[in-house]
Picture 1 (cartoon, protein in one colour):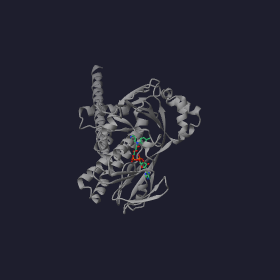
Picture 2 (spheres, protein in one colour):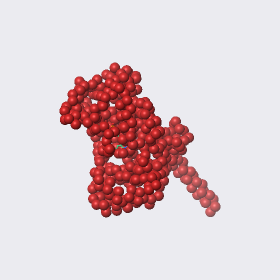
Picture 3 (cartoon, protein in one colour):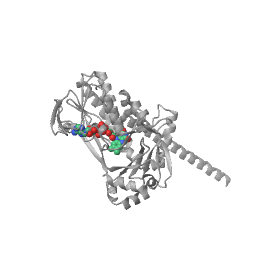
Picture 4 (cartoon, protein in one colour):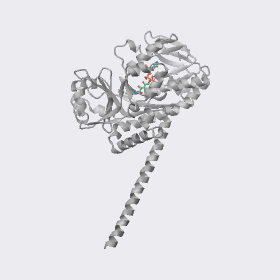
Length: 429
Ligand SMILES: Cc1cc2nc3c(=O)[nH]c(=O)nc-3n(C[C@H](O)[C@H](O)[C@H](O)COP(=O)(O)OP(=O)(O)OC[C@H]3O[C@@H](n4cnc5c(N)ncnc54)[C@H](O)[C@@H]3O)c2cc1C
C-alpha cells in the first residue's frame, strides 16, 4: 500500500521483534511455496528470502517404525518448497517497510476497539497504558487467527463465521547440528514420521538444526507425564529420532512448553465498512498443507490485482469484489489443510495412496498441462484453491472409470478364457 503511494500506520501488539533476543510464539520455520513467493516478488523481496536464505526441500522423507526411510518427491525434478525462518521473514519485511518514508510503525499497541463504518480504532499503548485513538480510510485487519478486528465483524448482521479446533495439539522440539556442525538428516527433505492418529515432522534451519513438531491428540500428551514415559514413547514410536534429538534435550524441550491447539477458521464476508480481513484473520487453517502464510501473501497479490482493476480510490468496489472472489478459495484451502492431515499422518503408509501418487506422477509427466496432481496444483501453481479441489474430483472420477473399465475388461477376458477352456475340455473328453 505504501508503494502505491498511501500513508500506512502499522500497529502491532508485540514489541519490535528485531530488538528481541527470543521471539515467543509459533513455529520457528515455515514451508514457503509459489503463492508466498508471488507476494514477495511483488514487493521485490523474493530473492532476499528464498535465494539467500530458503532451504530447498524436494521430497517428503518418510520414516518407518523400523528406522528405514523412503522419499516421495513433492513434484517434478527441480520443483521444491523452501524452509524459511519465521523470524527472518518478519524481519526482512519490517526492514523493507521501514525504508519507505510513508510507513510508520507503532509497536506494543493493542487494538482494543474499532468502528468499522467510521474507520476509527482505539489502541492501548502497552508501555504507557495510554489509549490512542486514530482513524483510517482503510483498516487492513491482519491480526491473526484470534483477530480483534474480526471480533467487530461478529457484531454485524450477515457475517458468517465458523471455527473448529481439531483434536490434535502440537509441540516443538529440536534436532541440533551434528558435532561437526552438519545436518543430522538429509536437508533436502521435509521429514515425516507418520503413525496413524499422530505424527512428527522436521524442517531444516539455516544453522543446520531441525525444528521438529510433534502432532498428537491432547490425551496422548497428557499421558507423557514423566521423562521415563516420554523416552519410552519415543523408543516405541520414533526410535530413529531419539539419538538425533538426544534424551536429555528431548526431556528439557518437551517439558519446557505446553502443547498448543490448532484452529481452523472460515468466515464471510471478509469486508465490512472500511475494514478488510486478510491472512489468518480471514482464514486461519491447520498447518498440514504448509499454506497459511502462503495464502496470506497470495491475499495481498489478489487484493493488489483488484486495486489495479478498479483503482485505489474506488474501495467501495474493490473490497466487495475482493471478498466475493477470495472467500471461496479461503474456504477451500481450509478444507484442503484438514484433508492433508489425514494424508500426512496416515495415508502415506498405504499402498493405494502410493500407487495413486505414482500414477499421478506418470500422467503429469505425459500430460503436464492436462493432468496436474492436487499437491502440485496447490503448491507449485497459482490455480485457485477451489479449482484445485474441482480438478482433483474430476481426476478421481477418471481414475474410478479407468479402474472400472479395466476391471470389467479383466473379468470379461477371464470369463471368455474359462468358457473356451471348458469347451476345449469337453471336446477332449
Ligand atoms: C505449527 C504451525 C506451523 C505452520 N507452518 C506453516 C508453513 O509451513 N507454511 C505456511 O505457509 N504457513 C504455516 N503456518 C501458518 C502461518 O503461521 C500463518 O498462516 C501465518 O503466520 C499468518 O500470518 P498473519 O500475518 O495472517 O497472522 P500472524 O502471523 O498471526 O500475525 C498476526 C499479528 O497480529 C498481531 N496482533 C494480534 N492481535 C493484535 C491486536 N489486538 N492488536 C494489534 N496487533 C495484534 C500479532 O502480534 C501478530 O504479529 C503454520 C502455523 C502453525 C501454527
